[in-house]
Structure formats: structure tokens, C-alpha cells
Length: 60
Image 1 (cartoon, rainbow, N blue to C red):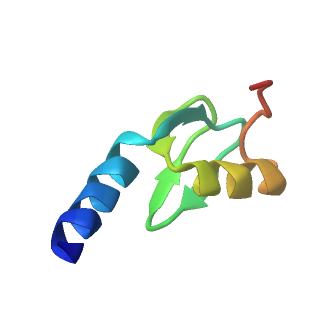
Image 2: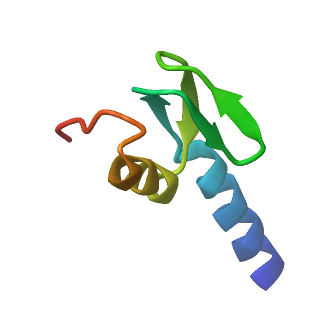
Image 3: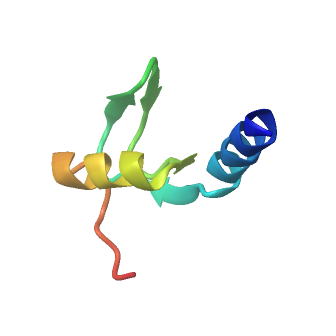
């Protein structure tokens, strides 16, 4: 039964992604992104990018 719960959690993590647009050139993970490029990230990653000033804060 725990296998099904773990699979559901992994599937949920894949679908809970937010599209963000970079406000400056950054290296995120192993990739480099230019200002204006967009990617999908998790909520936690989005918060980290906001704190770093790499993306524009949006009202939720």
C-alpha cells in the first residue's frame, strides 16, 4: 500500500509545477537561463528564486 502512496506523491509533485520567468541571467541547477526565459518549477523552488531576486514576485 505504501508503494501506491509514494507513487501518488511523486505524480502529485510532477503536476504541481509553476511557470516562472527569469528577470535576470541565472544558473539554476546545471542549466543557464537568460532574462525573459521561462521554466516550470516547484513551489519551493519558486520561493527560493524569489528570495534570490532571480524572478519577479507575483501576487497569488
